[in-house]
Image 1 (cartoon, rainbow, N blue to C red):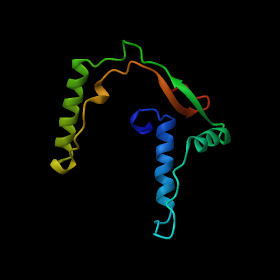
Image 2: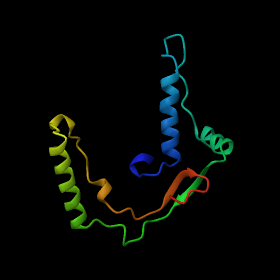
Image 3: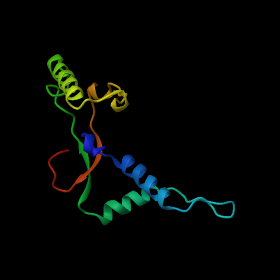
Length: 120
């Protein structure tokens, strides 16, 4: 999620860690018990063990930057149309997306960030 500009919070970190952990485990049989998922204690130990990671509060985006303007949407549409034509993309390369990224974010939230980073 960090690659698409959405900061990763504690729950996202723990969900991805559980996904990796369960993928590394052997398939349970009728004679073995399935592995238990990682807990918030694992997350706390990770943060304590890796001082470069620090929990922070992501600030609310200023109202001036927290809105979508028609010109920006128009520019995005024209750029996407140009790239579809230039790269000769067909319908198999089109993905269905919703408009949640266009909705304003009115609150701050807890995220995990690198120590000393100013980009939260």
